[in-house]
Image 1: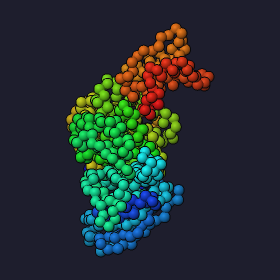
Image 2: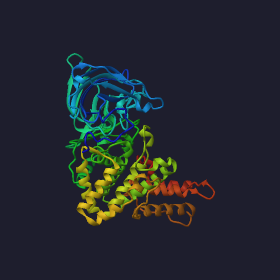
Image 3: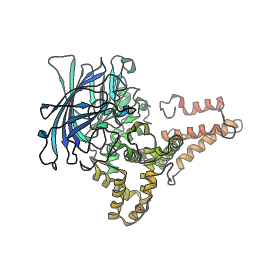
Image 4: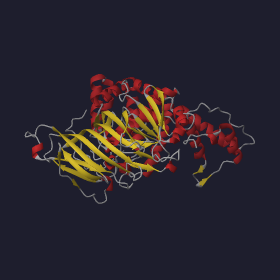
Length: 563
C-alpha cells in the first residue's frame, strides 16, 4: 500500500491530499424526491499529514450548499471558493482552516481531526452531476420515481464534500432515509432498516463499508426494488417486474466469482457480490461499485449471451477496486488489467478453445476505430490530463491497449509463471494505489528474484513505447481459428447472395457459437457490403436476408450486440 505521504499530484482534484486525507466518513442523508436533492450530514475522520505547512483541510465540492462546519466539536470557519472559469467539472474548493490550538506542537507527527459538515446538494443536474432523478414514467413500474448515482470519475464531489481523487481511500458508513415505499441500496453491506416513531412515511437504511475505497466508488440507488438470492453471497436487485428475468440471466455470477478466485489465487475480499439492474437511462454497460455492481437492463438478452459484462465488473473487485490507479492518467491500470482478467474468466467458464484470442481480435477492431478518431495524445496509455475532465479522455485505449500490454507480457513469459506474478502484484498493492512506473518497477523486480529468463525479457521490454507511444501498439500473433470460421461463413453467405441459383444455402450450425463469434460473423457480413473502389454500400437481396432470418432467428434475439 502506498504511504499516506506518497501521493502523486492530481490536478483533477481541488483538495489537498498531501496535507489531509479522509480515513472514514459517516454519511447521513435524506433523499428528497420532490425537490431532487439530498439533505445530508457528513462526519469525517481526517488525518492531517506530516508533509503540509498549509494547516487547512481542502475538499472537493460541486454545487453544494454548505450549512455548517464543525471541527473537533467546535463551530469552524470555512470558505467555498468560486468556480474556476471554464473548469466547471472541477467544482468549488471548500477550505476549512485548522487553528493552531487543534494542531500538535510537533509538526512531524500526523494527527486526526473530527470534522462535521451539514449541507444540501443542488437540484440542478448540471451541478449535481452524480445523481440521476427519474420520474415514474422512466421506470419499469411507472408508479414511483427512482434515483441512482454515478460518481466515476470525479462526480462524487457533487453529492458529498470529499477528497475526490482515487489516491485517497476511505471506509464509510451511511444512514439513508427514504420514503416508506422505497428501498435504498449502496456500495456497502446493509446492516439494518429502521422506521421512525415520529414519521411512519419514511424509513432509514443503514450501511457499512469496512474496506477503504476511493470516492468514485461511493454509490447509492433508491427505488421500488426487489431482490432474489442466486447464491449464498450473490443477490440480484431490480424493479419487481424484471426480477425473475434478471435472476435467470445472471445465474452464473457465483461461477464467475469462483473462477476469478482461482485465476488470482486470492479469495474474493468484499464479502458479498450483488447486482442491481437499473432503468434503461443508466449510461454504462456496468459500474463496478463494490458489493453492488450497477448494470444496464440491455444485458437481459434472455440467453446469458452478454454476461461478459458481469465478468468484467467482477474482475474489477481485484483490479480497480482493490488495486487502484493513483490518478486518472493511469486509468489503464484499472481497465487494462480488468479486461485481461475478464477474458481469462470467460475463457475458462465458456471452455471454448481460442475464445480469448477472438475477444482480443474484436477489441483490436474497436481500438483501431478509436485511434482514427482520437487526438494523438489521447492514444497513449499514460495520459497527461492536467486539470481537464477525465470523462473526456474515456475511450477503448485504456481497455484494449492496456489489455494488450498485459497479454503481451503474459505470452512473453508464459502463462504459468505470469499467474504467479498476478498473485504477487495483487497482494503487494491490495487496498492501495499504483502508478505505471511502479507497475514497471515491480514487474522487473519480481522476475529478477524469481525467474532469470523472464527477467531478461521484461527488462528489455519497450516500456516507454507502450506507456507513452502514440497510436496502435505492436500486437502479438493471435489464434484466428474462431475468427476465420466466422469470416468463412460470412463469405459463404455473400457467395449465396450473388449466386443463389447455383450455390447451396450455408448450413453451418451456429447455435453454440458465443456472442462474440456471432458478432464477428455479422461484422464480416457488413464489411463485405462496402465497395471501397466505388464507395457504394451494397445491399443483400431480400431473399437472402429472409433465408438467414429463418435459419438463425437473429430478429428475435434480445442480444443488443447482435441486433
